[in-house]
Image (cartoon, rainbow, N blue to C red; front, side):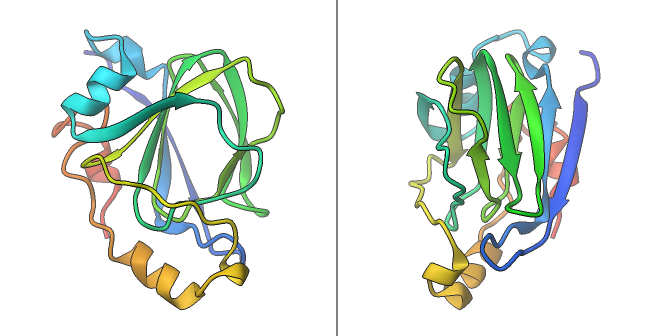
Length: 168
């Protein structure tokens, strides 16, 4: 297997979006590294369930109760990651994004010409938060800090690079 091309980004709390001390991890053209070329099957096999197929909201949001994986099944997308001081990233079919709990994300374009497959460690149910200013920020930050590191990388399982990149 070839080495996975990895890009990481760290984002700080901006007052609205809490973000996380863990980095966002992007695997470019991730599916070239596995025999099974189907994101949903790989996610489930590696314990990232509660899967869905859809586009990304156009309003900045985050999940305070779980990490999230996004595999771009088709098309191209421009996402803003990390809140107002974050970064716009361009992703293409086959790219995979792993978002730590608390990291803001939204679609910059109003396009619907793409589709992600999403999932969550251990098939967690996810919540939807929009701003620390509209919530009990202390309890949200405490909830994010208590979320454990997943047991497996959503793409490559126990040997995946996520487990080396995500350490508290």
